[in-house]
Structures are given as C-alpha cells and as structure tokens.
Image (tube, rainbow, N blue to C red):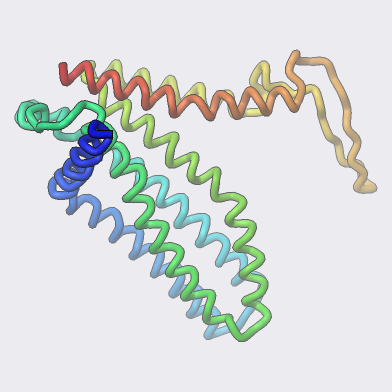
Amino acid sequence: MQQIKLFFKDFSRLIAVHYRENWWVGLFAIGALSMVTIYKYINIINIYSNIGWNQELLTLFNHNRELCTALIVFITAVYSFACTLKTYGDKERIHDAMMLPASHKAKFFAEVLYSLVFIPLVMFVILFVTDTVTALIFHSSEEYIVLINTDKEYIYSLPSYLYAILFFHSITTLWRADNSHIAVRTVVVMTILFLAFYVNTPLTYPFIWSDFTEVTREGLHIVFNMEISWASSELGKILHNLIYGTLPIMLYAISYYKHKERSL
C-alpha cells in the first residue's frame, strides 16, 4: 500500500512537471482543434439560417464530426511525437530528468498518460460542447431528432477513432523511447505501419476469408463458401482483433523497457 501511495505521489508530481515544460505545445494543439471545430460549426449555423434545413446540412453535420475526430487523432499523435519523453531524449537535459526522485514506472506512465489521456480528453470535451450547442439550435424542430439518431451512428464509429489514437500514440512513444539511430527507428516504425495496414486489407493471407457475399440485381444476398484459405471469416476476425488488440500493448511494453534501458 505504501508503494502504491508513493507511486501516485510521484506520478502526480511528474504530471505537473510535464505540464510546466510543455503547456504551450498543449495550448497550441487544443487551440488549433478549437478554431477548426468552431469554424466548421459556425458554417453549419450560417447555412441553416440562410437556406434552412436540408439533407445536405445533415451530411455536413456528420462530416464535421468525423473530420474533427480525425483531427483529434492527428493532433494527439503530433503532440506525442513532439513532447512524450522529450526531456529524456535531450542530451543537455537528460541528466536532470534522470535525477528526479521517482521510479522508472512513474516517469514513463506520467509521460505516456498525459499525452494519451489528458490531451485527447480535453479536445473531445471541446468537440462535444460545440456539437451539443450547435444541435440545440434545432431543439424545437423535427431535425433535432434526426441529429440525435445520427449521434448513435457516430458513437458506434467512435471506438475505431479511439483505437487509432492508441495505435499511433504507441508508435510515437516507441520512437521517443528508443535511443538508437534515427534510421533504425524509421525502419522499425515504417515496418509496423506497413504490417498493420497490410494485414487490415481483405486480400492478405490468411485473412482471405472463405465466405463471400454477392448481391444480385434483384437485391438478394447470396453467400458463397470457397476454400481459398484456412481461415474462415469468423476465425479471420478473431485473429484480426487479436493482432490489433495486442499490438499497442507490445509497443508500449517495448517502449517501457527501452526507456528503462536508457535510464540505466
């Protein structure tokens, strides 16, 4: 129990240290997201006030959500690349960072969780508030109900965006934690990206699923079973989820031991 209390004490102190050193980068990142989000939603309000409600406006509303969420993924990856474990990669400041009275675990998790949780959380709050305020403009009309229904579709797609944040963040963390030559790190990161996206395509063995669906002119769905792979669609999905689920964990584990190795 005493070790847990000490860990969280060190962790909170290191979070404060990271904030003092990188507050301006975080402010710039959150400000950039805020400006884009507010601009896009003001555009929706202007269109609604000029021409009223139409299907194109609903499409634009959904597009704004997806665009701003994708921007959150991008900004989080850039922030992580710029700030996560930054002090430990600076030859002039690494000694001071190493001498901080805290464990390797506390130092690593403080750096990682700040950029993985705090930064995207603030940006999602900004997006949610802006989206809600804009939707309340349609509160007295039937269009508001339509927007609520589209919220459900957005929520269903949200896990894929959250995973994208986790995936790209784990890659940038590995880049920052490894002290090997930049060429070696580049090859490693590009290999991970290539394998991840290559495996995600439907034509990659063993993910050539043997269950195919064809839609006829009459709109009928016909399922064909073809033995072109040892992996069925069910097994392929399980293997796919297993690979994608364990990949970030493996990258974070490697990053931690690389960080610990550098500290030693």
